[in-house]
Amino acid sequence: MALRGLAHSGPNSRGPSEEVVAAAEERRAPAVVPVGAVREDDEEDDGRGRGLLRWDGFSAWLHCVCVVGFDLELGQAVEVIYPQHSKLTDKEKTNICYLSFPDSNSGCLGDTQFCFRFRQSSGRRVSLHCLLDQFDKDLPVYLKKDPAYFYGYVYFRQVRDKTLKRGYFQKSLVLISKLPYIHFFHTVLKQIAPEYFEKSEPYLEAACNDVDQWPAPVPGKTLHLPIMGVVMKANTHISVILPTVHEVDLFRCFCPVFLHSQMLWELVLLGEPLVVMAPSPSESSETVLALINCISPLKYVSDFRPYFTIHDSEFKEYTTRTQAPPSVILGVTNPFFAKTLQHWPHIIRIGDLKPAGEIPKQVKVKKLKNLKTLDSKPGVYTSYKPYLNRDEEIIKQLQKVLIVSSFKGVQQKRPSEAQSVILRRYFLELTQSFIIPLERYVASLMPLQKSISPWKSPPQLRQFLPEEFMKTLEKTGPQLTSRIKGDWIGLYRHFLKSPNFDGWFKTRRKEMTQKLEALHLEALCEEDLLLWTQKHTEVETVDLVLKLKNKLLQADREHLPVKPETMEKLRTHIDAIIFALPEDLQGILLKTGMT
Image (tube, rainbow, N blue to C red; front, side, top):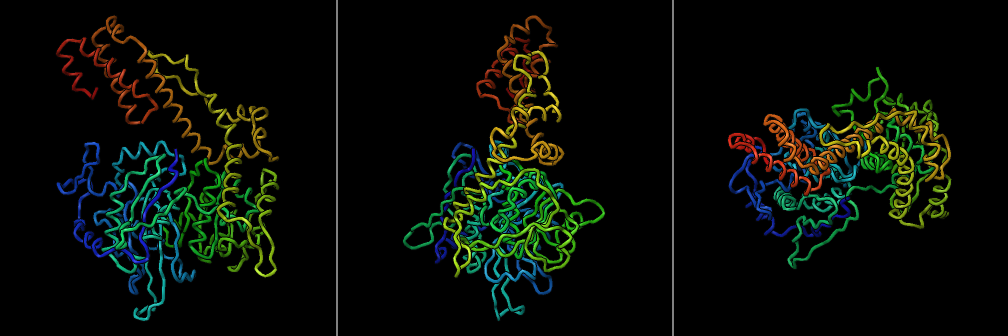
């Protein structure tokens, strides 16, 4: 189930009332609160009889909010971290500092929004939100939180200010989160950042307190999330309805290269090293995120950096010439990368993304040998030869909505949102046509249910054999669902060696192994376990009880797909067996684990 929409109320142009800001001052968090500490005034009831720690609601959405300013002597510096008890390592702070500002040559005057992504420092404590982890399990891959990475959602303002020695006001408001809700957090920033730059820290505290009251991001629900909602004396609200929380404007990003969109889909699918060179962080981050999105619902498992700078902690790792480029997609803006990364096999160079309604000139595919100078023209620089023939139908469909005006250049008949729907459906159908034969073959690796015995360990999955899979394509291949011709076999052979296949198959194998464990539990529940104990020794009975308890713990810990009634039935079996034993054993077994 997907989070289909998030509706939230935001401020109007007048900003929060004095009462709201005053309330934030009264609710100011302590300077330092140890992670996991419980104080009487911090505990609230969640409506289900359980206490929630202060900031638990906030932590379900955000790790923290940072304000990054520019200091003439120090350069970029984190001025504010809120809530104050939020933990960031020095390395994480350094990454946030550099990634929250456009490169100096980008010349981003006014307000700019973009997104970046960086690795969490090793040794960070695992989140305590077990309930949220269970929600996350049910989400599609494009909505799952990123366990090893943080996303940074940036609202950067650069305006002339003669009162400052540097001559410019330069500051970024940054939301740090594990959630890949690009559209949602950019929309939240649009609501709060302009007001924050006017009203400073009390406004930020009030906004964070609002976030702390939000319900958890539960899959399948449309949520109403107030953010500084009561801002007018008339107490009216401004509602912003988001149909999705994660999607970028796909057509706007692919528009300069839509003639080559199918080739780019192949490169992303195969996990090829890819660089997006753009004029600003907005263009680079949007384009990288659009590329990741184009193979949905398949998860892109390699690293990707919507905005990457020379100061990034992985800069040396990703730019070394001593080994082949890694499987990663980088979005860059500094011309320095044109020289540093010209040995990479696939480079997309784009110009300024046009506003909705304008279509840029289509770039060409060029050989990498042409990428020698810093002023290279927009284009796709690669020697890659696609496995599949280009789908002329989608190109015609997109070109149908274009009209040529001698005065305004090329314009759209249809809004960008509608174009994005067409392109997203095209990519979805292409990915599904590719993945369905793999899904069908992997399903055949599952043992038959009749082979599951309650008295034996669950049977193992059959091994994935590439050549056996290839033989299935003749009758059940992508030709059944796709009109596209080409070397599908070659594409599959390449994909089976890619990180995306490895990640996909590990996930599917884990899901099927868990299904086998669940079926094994169900088989156990159908047995008369009490009758079994009457034919076996006390030692064997105790061993059975301990194994059954471990099964229950495993089912809870791994969120196995077991029906609640099955779990309850097994607990009843365990209790019946325990109470049939001598009293001394009953006491010991009742203390061992929970039934």
